[in-house]
Length: 171
Image (cartoon, rainbow, N blue to C red; front, top):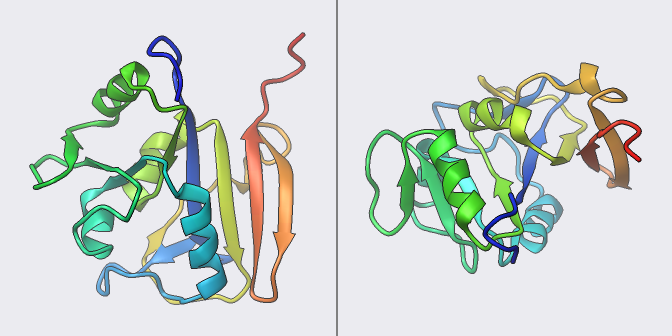
């Protein structure tokens, strides 16, 4: 955990198909089921805080995942979790917290809001196209300028890529 005077690293973690589909609003669920990707999500986020929107929180059962405190962006109140009315309020809280990293776990509106503030992205690129009306914001045009790929793990049905925000040629 970091000292209260240092901002945590904001890491977006997401899985999307080639069309950036991340979900189906009618089903409020992922359009796919890849156990290896779910294990990766669990391994990567274990013991770390998750920031997400209300609909995403409800889609995981309306309770925090084991050993991962959930923080929710919502205009309302929810039992058993800390809620924030906007991303600035959440970021102010995390700035004064002792967390070194915060995982941004969706949905689409939270990703769109937090993408400009993200330091890192861990993206599972699903190879197959799926039906869905919830999409991750377009970012691929920024690869090589804003985002630098630092890791890649190939799987038969998907590729997990890690990107960091390119800070330029800082000395």
